[in-house]
Length: 130
Image (cartoon, rainbow, N blue to C red; front, side):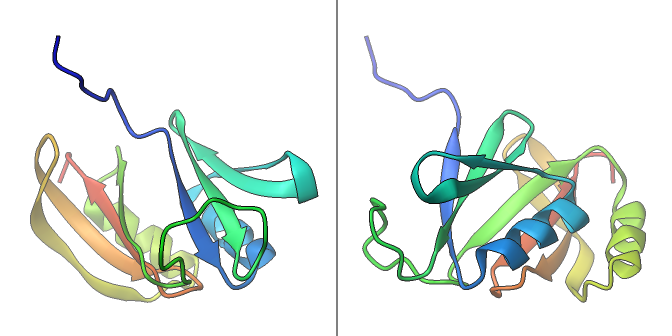
C-alpha cells in the first residue's frame, strides 16, 4: 500500500498582532474565530480547515524553522465570481495587488484576485467560476 495524505488540515501563521489578524480574516474572508487550548490560542476556521494564529515570539509552539510574519502565500477558493471578489475587497477597504487574472488551481483553471493581510502575507482569492 502506498502512503498518501488526504487533505490539508491546518496551517500556522505567525502574526504580529493576533487580534488584528483574526479580525481581518473574519471581516474580509468570513472565517470564524475560535479560542482553544492553553493561553487562549486563536484559530480561524473555514470549509473544514483552520488557520492557527501564532503570535510572533510566543513560546510553546512547534513551528517552522523560520516562522516570521508576512512570509506566506495562501490561496483560498470561493464560489463567487472574481468581479464580486473585487467589489467585496473594495467595500472592505482592502487594496488589490493584482487581478482578476487567469491562473491554474489544483482542480483546473481559476480566476484570481490578490491582496495582502495585515502582516503582508499574499492572499490569493480564486474562483473556479470565473
